[in-house]
Image 1 (cartoon, one colour):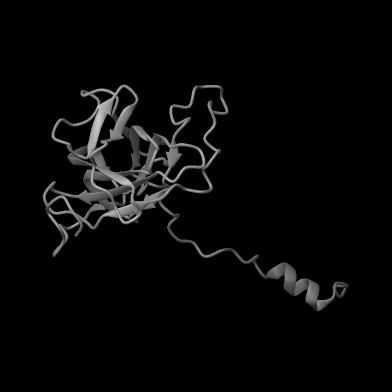
Image 2 (cartoon, helix red, strand yellow):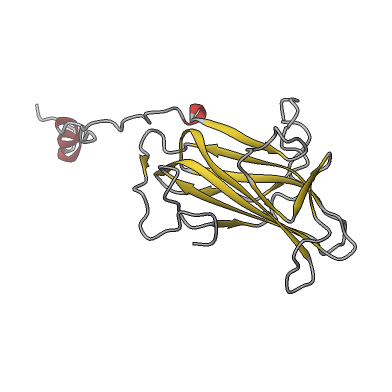
Amino acid sequence: MADSKPKAALAAEETPAATAPSGPEPSPPAIDPESQPRTTLIYDFSSPDGFPKASRLKGLYMTDEGLKVSADAETNAHGHRVGILETPSQPLDFPSNAVTPLWKVDLPEGGASQVHVEVAFSVNGTDWTKWYHFDADADSLGQIRPTYPDGRPNPNYGYVSGGLLVHGLTQYDHIRSRVVLEAAEGEDPALHSIRYYYQDSTLGEGRLASPPRGTDSSVGTP
């Protein structure tokens, strides 16, 4: 008796189902993204023990409110008195590829006083990258809330974020900074503190940078 099924149906039954080609499965990250190293370096300018003693102050003096610009400080082209803070080389707790500076500063509302933050990086504390300039991150203004979603106090509340700088998979293990505080005529701004939130987001694939060539190894503009 002939099979009543169409030949096409028989062929389909005899042909094994197609399977995806076998191969090695992707390796999981070496480090859980939720467990990547991260911490904060804090400088408090209201106490002589709150920041490195080797820091250089020019045109600044310390008060209970933080650093302020001296009355006899040099002035710039805008007629603003200018104070400069330079912090020395600071080893990081672990090699890092990303940093976010945050600063707490008292600027008169509607005034012309300003603060400028710059950061440089090194793998040996001697040879440095260029200075990276940070402005206030417009997207973060007003976004740092007093508490985290789980109710814990947010230590960054009241700070201005300079945004995130990422070096890809390149890591550094030293940091230094330069802060310029401008005081407009009749204004008395105060720099309370700076927090450098740094992390290693390379998930175990990062490598320390080679010492840069032809960069500045002194405090100043490369």
